Image (tube, rainbow, N blue to C red; front, side, top):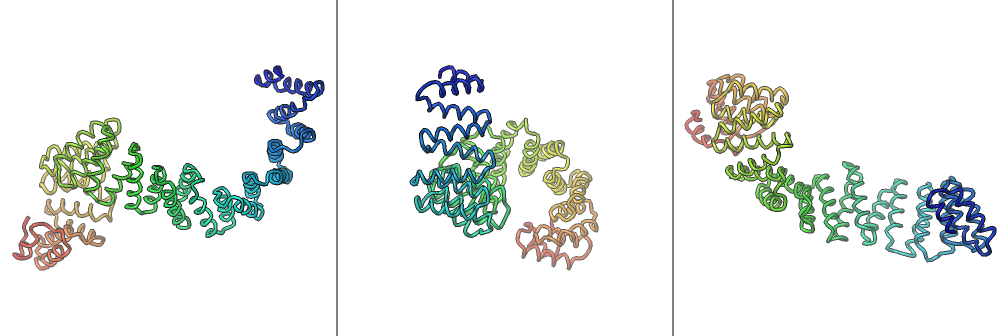
Length: 460
């Protein structure tokens, strides 16, 4: 016996087989070695020999669960489905209280397109164990394959409602749903499953995290953020969750939330350059450019190994320094951003526009804004910037053409007011006043708009 074990551990299966065969033949009451011998045959891929040996063992010891299970595996490897199913039925009959054998048989039927039998056995399992989530999952898969989406959704929701279905299994399934999105046919089911998961596992951060992913991907940004925040409340150590929260804050233009969440995140992750970036942006949006610059300059030092992020820092610094009227620093920041990416749209647009406001480097501003308009000929923001540069260069006809094109897609007060200014310079005073009135009505025009309308004069 010891020799056989040594040969087996050394993977000398032929010699181990010879030893066990001799023991069984020569030593009285050694038939229990048949199980070792059969396992050896299976290890060598000698399936027929293994099967014969297991059957020999069954004659000696009677039906055994482990033997039936191994015979079933052999039949499956031999593509003998009927024999494998027969062994499954043996397991069920000899173990009527064991739901696991019923479910294993149901899965085998399902995987071989024997759907009626799969449904029958799954329902049998549910009669024995009404809350069994595995049976529900088998039914959900079968109904899905059959095209019965309503019943499939019902069964998978019942499975998810069971605490017995492990949270990791639920997350894995939800991730599979995420991979299939966008897909209107499954979107609501996926959202419902995520909600069920958070209710059944209210103390699992991963439940809220994957729910946040689903909500965000399906366009429910605010709900997604709330789910991420609940995940953070349970486990605040995951930087990606914080990042998702602040990205949504930014997308929703909720400056207060962006500022509050970046401040909290930086307490936990002070070395994350991206979080300093969003913190700086939040301060700038909150009309606190000094604090914004401080955060951006600090974060920039942490981003030296990430040129793309550096370019974003420099672009924002260009905006911030302009607000502080530190124009040399603003220009230098934009130049740094464009040195990495000459097509950085935000840098090209803002740099051009701020130069035009200052009346400085107007030819350079025209070149940059003109480049943007060529790339994005229908973008009203870029058209307005280009028009204002032309206006400063006294090319009023060119400015008029650009603004008229922009006004086909926008009702922005600034663009309308600029159009009025151009018309005034072209001697069309009445039309100019009409446009100024439109700008005032739209809301968001300059501080000069009331005087322009009242005096019918241009103020800049």
